[in-house]
Amino acid sequence: MKSILITGGTGFFGKSFVKHILEKKDFKRIVIFSRDEFKQFEMQNELKFNKNYGKLRFFVGDIRDLDRLKIASKNIDIIIHAAALKHVPTAEYNPFEFVKTNIIGSENVVKASLDNSVKKIISISTDKAVSPLNLYGATKLVADKIIISANQYASENRSIFSVVRYGNVINSRGSVIPFFKEFIKTNKFFPITNSEMTRFWISIEDCIKFVEDTLQIMIGGEIFIPKIPSMKITELAKAINPKLPLKEIGIRPGEKIHEIMISNDDARNTFETKDRYIIEPEFLNLTKRRLKIENRFKEKIKKVPTDFFYSSGTNKKWLSKKDIEKTLKKIYEKNSI
Image 1 (cartoon, rainbow, N blue to C red):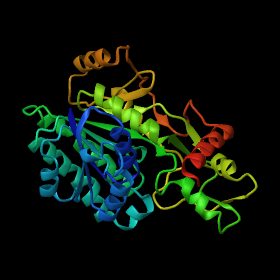
Image 2 (image 1 turned 180 degrees about the vertical axis):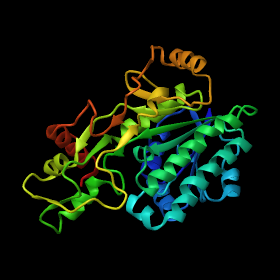
Image 3 (image 1 turned 120 degrees about the vertical axis):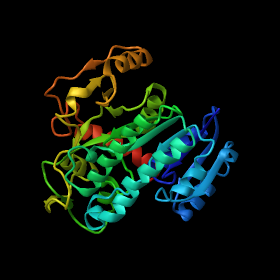
Image 4 (image 1 turned 90 degrees about the vertical axis):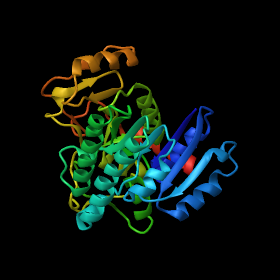
């Protein structure tokens, strides 16, 4: 029976992950660590009739506060580190706040994990951490490096650290779908920053499953990336309301036209399976690690070509307008929006 702590436990991913885990029986307790007491209050009211509610623990705290994080991490087996400041334009005008949360906060997660001998730690990352153009992506890149490097300090207490990196989560807070839906209530057009813009797309359900699977196969030091489809922002707008015109308004500060999840430079250490890519750390023995991972996957993993890179603009998998319409229909039925 495992005890799990989720930083950012009241955020979109954290809350969804908690709801999923609550339906399982193979855990001892779930600690929800977040700084927003009102979101915790709302979450308590929403989940209080769940049969496993008694296994939940709510910790008000900030990952910037190492002492508080150490207390919350006592007797914890697994940490899912999902806490972050994430809005790209906001980061450009508040750089120090993003550094304190995304970088110093991640360092604190590592220190608290090592001090409490937490067995497995997964940090949730983003496609914006690759070849970052914006400050948010730069802070997440550093956070990823901190998490991966932590494996060099963890030999004595056997803590293992890995990263899960994925693209835009469908209908998450602050994402483009709720923004478009709200915007067209009072406007007669879709604001498109660039007509060529593409994004990776993944559902929250697939995110949760990917993290769960990663907990089973991780050996420490990897960055795990799911093979997911891309979509054009213009196709999304047309799927939401095909009658409204598109108006190009220009790129926002720090925004990319296409996102990247694996760069050319990462290719030399990248392997793939049927459903994911794995970037291995340069500082560890790749041959021994590859055999261990193959045993856990129960399938052969192969190295990607040296000129490989994984971009939303050149992806092999694409969502059509019909695919997007089906996805939107499911969202509307589920959330009644």
